[in-house]
Image (cartoon, rainbow, N blue to C red; front, side, top):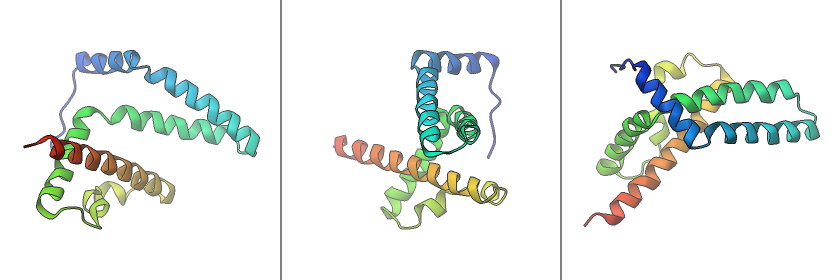
Length: 131
């Protein structure tokens, strides 16, 4: 898969879009809520901060372009075979997946499942409006 190199201008546009959409306010709010919940449940706050550091990087990496590429893969599966039981396995980047530790594999699979459900929902909406 050929990876496109982004220009500084593209990075700036994405950063501006995140600011306009309240991305960082949501991040701070969610982090604060999780820190309170962690403290109440006796979980180390450092673990929550570590998780949110990881999550923020993943969220920023998931651009609209990447989702469009992912959506097109899902659409091909749904158009040709319908909903299949092994969709997540088919969509998994196996080379990347093999490099992950157990916890990261779990996070990757969960995130992939969430993206898949979003793509299926979008697919259904698009099919419903096509004549």
